[in-house]
Length: 266
Image (tube, rainbow, N blue to C red):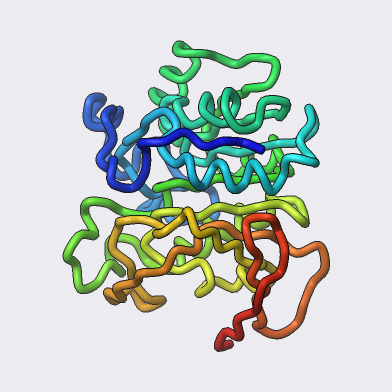
């Protein structure tokens, strides 16, 4: 069993290293994601806050859930990998035998990641767009950590629609869903919107773990982009092997056992 490191978590934000601010990044740094409008890049969050082992509880739960399947063919994606601290965390502490791919829209961030560790036998970095997302997949686990949000710009806003519309969040989630293998795990943490508000979520179960008390600190909004404060802790989702009709979501514990179900509105 993987033992998570201690001392890191949501309270660490903003993290110690802010690459974007140091390098003059803007909200559109890195370009467009293909299907999204040019106003909203493939990865939404312009600031490159990062830190080694920043989310140990989340990484530990997903590692334990997939431990029996981990091998050299098992692919893990760090979506919005910044300068590579998350990639190195996954490779060194949680997915030792697996292939780790780091994608980011910032060419400068990817260059820095390569300088600090570079591509190796089990680690690869690339510029993020819909083509590279597909080319390096399909993935067995995808981590979208603090990337599907606008922060601190969304703080204390009554509406986020002009800054980051729900439709763009849903497009990014759909792209990640398409890149994930059935039975794989999608982690959407510290996001401005609720994963279960998206159409893509209909074929997912949710993992709830006692050691994960929150799904992030950024402001939350409903599908209309209006402020909707939330105390939810869900951020780990398992893609079903089979397609299910209806909106009944199975609740799994951190060992992958079903412990309940939730009926959602259409």
